[in-house]
Amino acid sequence: MFINTNLLAANVNRNLKSSNYKMNKTMEKLSSGYRINRAADDAAGLAISEKMKYQINGTQQASRNVQDGISLIQTAEGGMNEIHTMLQRMNTLANQASNGSYTNGDRNKLDIEFQQLKREINSIAENTNFNGIKLLNGSATSKDIILSAKNILTFTFDSNPSHGDHIGVGHLINMTKIDFNLPGNLTKDYHVPIGSTLSETLNNLKLQYDLLKSGDIGHSFDQDGVINTRMYIHGNKVYVLSDEPLGGERSINIDAVMNSGNPASITIPSEGKDIEIQKGFESDDSLLLDMPNVTTEMINVSELSISSIGNASNSIALISSAINKVSTERAKLGAYQNRLEHTLNNLHNSEENLSAAHSRIRDADMAQEMTTFTKNQILVQAGTSMLAQANAIPQNILKLLG
Image 1: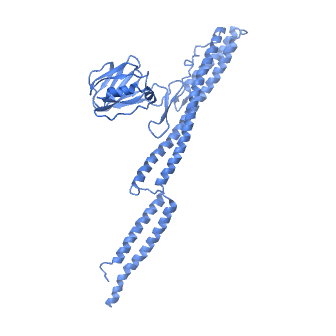
Image 2 (image 1 turned 135 degrees about the vertical axis):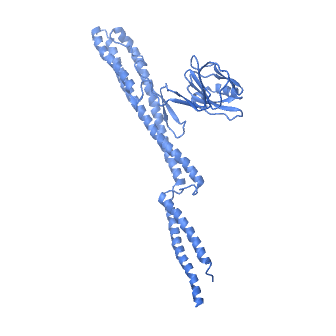
Image 3 (image 1 turned 60 degrees about the vertical axis):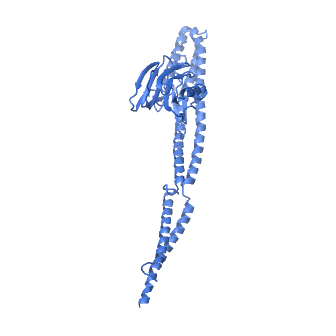
């Protein structure tokens, strides 16, 4: 028997420490509700669950975004419903004034209401807004465009870039010009690799008008000797942005050249009538709402009058055309709303399924953890008791000394 080294007590103490550690881990899981509380618990599971949490959070906010978008559309459509009602009343008045049984004095009285209806159409078109964003006068927009790079060139064309227009950007690697063989005015931010293979790349772009329109072309090409430079077309201006020096001779009118090597930016106030609804957790998962302009000028009724029988007769056809225009715009909004409602249903399904998958990876099975905790708790109690017994055994040596 030995007293300097109590191997039995050391063995019991080792097992007790192990049981204590396991019980503490189980208590942590039970108290937090998570199976994975730190990367050491399950490194791969933690990485996967955090990506899923990113998707879940994005999907939840996208769901709220879509509901806001539906509310915005309903607000706009409500205003247009009233415009439709007024146009129908204007049609009734014009038809009445076209009747030969009325005098011009009678028509003047009818025209008083007719003109007031026109003013109210403009009032609704100018004042219908959602969160301060005007919806029916063609000025709706959700954000300005900000272009940033170390070097920015701004080129101005006499008109919007079209087939055959070009910019010469000099001795940038081995290329001499960028051709814009585009189908009309394209307001789209896309990447163009500038380098020795530029001509081949541009030829491919020219042949893919449909992809260009849909925005499916938006990536850079991994090729040797290529500098990734962005080119943005807005109206009659073309912006070339790069973090590399932009040198050499240039054609067309140059508005600005910034080659400072320091980050620079240009803010382009949005002139469009698109409102972007972020409907997913990915940055490019959005829907542009093309909002209508239903002012009297745009629906071609601003100059109408029914003060004479001739004017009244002419007004009938123009009001019919205006009603059709407003109907078309309302149909477009209705289509957007139906699409967003389906998007919302899909977001709810995705959120539910992603949450279930995230829970299976990250959350603790409380029944299983409680069973493990009970086992470890008993082992700790038993280990503590056995350690006391092991520590008492060397005292038996005192009997030999007696």
